Image (cartoon, rainbow, N blue to C red; front, side, top):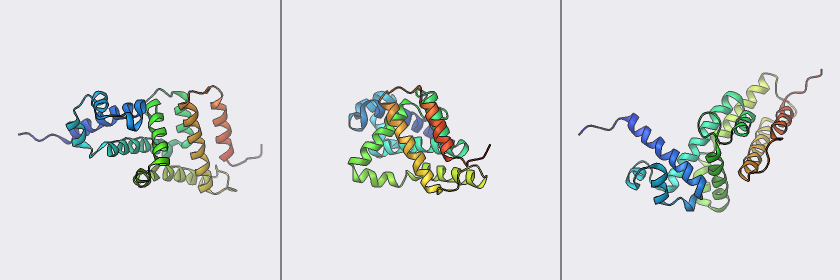
Length: 197
């Protein structure tokens, strides 16, 4: 019997994660039943749970996948760019910007962090990647002389993460977003080093 290639296994895992992201975003964690996961992924429960131990492991994997994608953009362009990408095209679910499904996943992570201590403990082991990337990018900006030096990098990291959470909530609630590009200009300017003109 031929062995299944690593490429095939990786593609199948990607198919499951992508389908599950849509399912969790639409129905929430509790509403993402096995039947709905099967429909969203186009695969049987056996195929899904061959790759993931349980529903929580699947949810953590897709949340971690989203965090990794965001951390890659942050490392290259900064957290404000992640927010600009999200604002520019909230319907995009591939490429650099997280999309609408990402918004749903992010909100579900926040809800579960608030209500589920066991999930909070498991998520803490995975969630540091975005903070680390943001902190490293800000330190690089400071070392380059582009970042204000009267506030610690840790405080600026927390500030930008809070702005991101607010933007996510704003977009997820469907509130008007036409003025938010200008808001992000203010946010970006607020972390830059002041230069006399």
